[in-house]
Image (cartoon, rainbow, N blue to C red; front, side, top):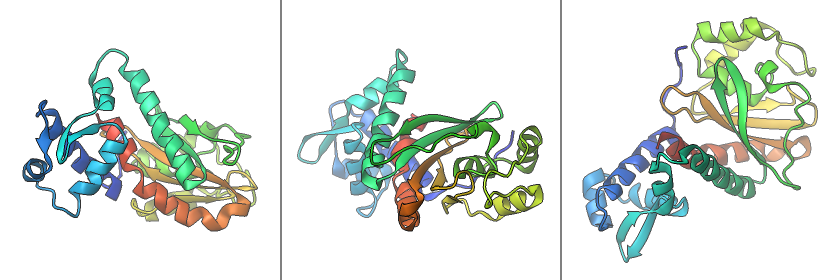
Length: 252
């Protein structure tokens, strides 16, 4: 399976954040912000925001004014013992915080062994999750999650997926023409969130952004009741900006 994805802004931010983490991890006794700037070559327009994000996520701790060390979250993910559980817990904390800040249900989805899988979800009483009335594995053509994942594959992989899952009409807005769907996927800029405007389910709108790390295809998504559709684009833009911590966790 070949990928079609291009680097997005969160991807570049995650790469910069990993450079910061690498520099911090190499200095067990602590590293100053001035030394961090020298070693990472990140200027004052980038470095302070990345350090704040890494501190918020628990990957970096400030021990004295302007001196930083590796945080507890980094140690847990660096440990081979229990790493999968630690990663899942860290990702859940991150998407729980996103749910509260965006005011929408949040999902992490992956394309695994040729299938769409929603691997984690953050929902709540005020942010209900999508009712999975049709299996997400069979409805990639209709959902923001599915279209984001398919959009990161090459043409052969997309056609293979669609050959295994019939493009059923789920609502009056669902695209059921394969050529039209493939054309829309080709035209979708990788830096722009994919939207689902009641294509999967009447009463729900969704958005998704890529969170591909290496050869693993993934996306970060949100859903809103249709009465909050006026918030969708702004929420999607926030989701795109806030995808960096998820990418960092997946890349460690």
